[in-house]
Structure formats: structure tokens, C-alpha cells
Length: 334
Ligand SMILES: NC(=O)c1ccc[n+]([C@@H]2O[C@H](COP(=O)([O-])OP(=O)(O)OC[C@H]3O[C@@H](n4cnc5c(N)ncnc54)[C@H](OP(=O)(O)O)[C@@H]3O)[C@@H](O)[C@H]2O)c1
Image (cartoon, rainbow, N blue to C red; front, side, top):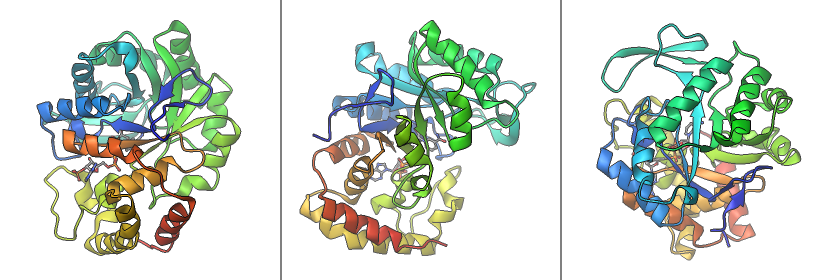
């Protein structure tokens, strides 16, 4: 049964194989979002059996977490698994960290985003996230990106303190490579990694996935639909609204869209055989990959949320999975 929840690494947290990804509903980098539609999308996902929601402080600069907090009020807290992230600060011009990135916040104010995983910042951020989410514990707390100005073991020791205090049930990292995970693991219990992974982005297969499997680290992968490109809905003439990062993303050139659509056309017979959509086949393929605990799938409205949850309702055969892999291994995007 693909619908069954899965244990996250060596932690006590169990996640649904499809996790609701709450980045796009924060609006920032996705050309905005409608509040009620976003809340309804989260609820539709939960009502369809998806018990886990992934957000981050930086998504909509606090807004996505607030929306998640509003949506889950309707449910018993222990029925929902909340994953959020710290380590990208926008809210204090005096803060330290690396990779300064000038952006506008949701009110149009100029801010500088920095990767900051200093212990004091992590402790501060956790309190802010708990308030926005309207809860007194976070099921999975993750460091969003490596902060090269702070040793990984120091950051991780701060996360471990939160775990021991009960504010956090399990600790994860995101966008870490093997060396960073090694250091983190020397300072506490690493339950999961959140890396990018899709039929178009399979880099983790060479070293990161084997490392996580060897050390029982859960792997919850992001952008499995490659930000919508693998649904078949991104035709060469589709225009993205202002502020939607996909308008300048390298995979979304007109030529690449055509190539991806051609590849999707080759796997259409497999989708037809299961009376499924291409998006559902791609999600199903992803969560059946060995070593993948769950796929974080973004949805912007209740229809997409329900549709993505239904990707767990069938099982691709080994031959179909191999054929899908062959098609995308032969695809080269420029
Ligand atoms: N840790 C990190 O650094 C990191 C980075 C990226 C993402 N993430 C996490 O991973 C989650 C998912 O990644 P993602 O949002 O980047 O990409 P994704 O899940 O690959 O794609 C989501 C987008 O695809 C489109 N879509 C979704 N379901 C669809 C359906 N059934 N039919 C047609 N189109 C559909 C929607 O956009 P349109 O309708 O507008 O086309 C949606 O916003 C995020 O929400 C976030 O939680 C983490």
C-alpha cells in the first residue's frame, strides 16, 4: 500500500509519502497567492490523507507558516506532522551569515536575506515559527541551507538542544552534502535530509542517496514535479506572472519546455494504463525510488492538492518505472 505513512530515518516521526509543500502558497517567488485558496489547498490535502506539511520561515517571509497555522486549526494537532525550516533570515538588518541576497519582502520593503545558522539565531527562529504556526512543538525542524560562516556541528548542537527541550521532535537538514551531514551527525541525531530530486534532477543518486541509506537518514525530496514542468502544463506559450521565478529558470526556456513535453509524451501510455495524469505518474515514480522516504509536492489550490494525493492510488510496475527512467535519462536540457 503506497498510502501508508513512512518512518523518518531513526526518529519517531511518520510522514505521508506525499508531503504538502507550502512554498508556492507563500506567494514569494511564485507571483503571489490567494490566501483562502491556499488555506483550502492545505485542508484538501489533509482531507485526502496527506498528514505532513512542509514549510519554512522564509516562505513568504513568515506568511506560509501563518497560513499553515490557520489551516491546521481545524484538526487535532497530533494528526498533523509539521515540518518547517530555519536558517534563512530576512528580518534583521544587523544579522550575520553568508550569501547576502537583496529581495523585497511581502510589503515591498527592501530586505537582505542571509543564510544564518548561528546557534542563537536558531533558538530565536524556533520561537518565531512556533508562534506563527500556532503550536508548541514542531515535528521536524530543518536547517534550510548550509551557512558557511558557522560550523555544521555548532548549528546542529543548537538544534539538538531544541529536540531535547521537546520543542522539536526530530531534526533535519536541507541542501547539505555528505561532508556537511557527517559534521552535523557528530553533534546530534539527524533524522532527514531535504534535497532536490526529480526525473530531471537526479544528482543525489551518486553519493547523497547511498550515504543516507547507509546511515538510516530519511530523504524527503523537493520539487519532484520540477516546479510544474513535469506535469505537462508548462507549454511553450505559457507566460508566468511577474515575480514568478520560473520565468527566468534555466529549465523553463521554450526549447527545454518542448523537449520535456516530448519526453512526457513518451510516458503518456503508462499514465493512460493507470488512468492517471502525468503529474501523478511522476509523483508515483519518485516515491517508489529506493531510499526516498517522501516527495514534497507543491500545490496552489484544492484541485491540485487532491490530485497529487491521488498519486498514491496506484503502483507503477518495475518495467514501467525502468521505462520512465530510460526516457528521462535520454533527455538533455541545455
Ligand atoms: N529545501 C529547499 O531548499 C526547497 C526548495 C524548493 C522546494 N522545497 C519544498 O518542496 C516543495 C515542492 O517543491 P516546489 O513547490 O518547488 O515544486 P513542485 O512540487 O515540483 O511543483 C509545484 C508546482 O507545480 C504545479 N502543480 C502542482 N500540482 C499540479 C498538478 N496536479 N497539476 C498541474 N500543476 C501542478 C503548481 O504550480 P502552477 O500551478 O503555478 O504551475 C505548483 O506550485 C515546496 O513547496 C517546498 O516545501 C524546498
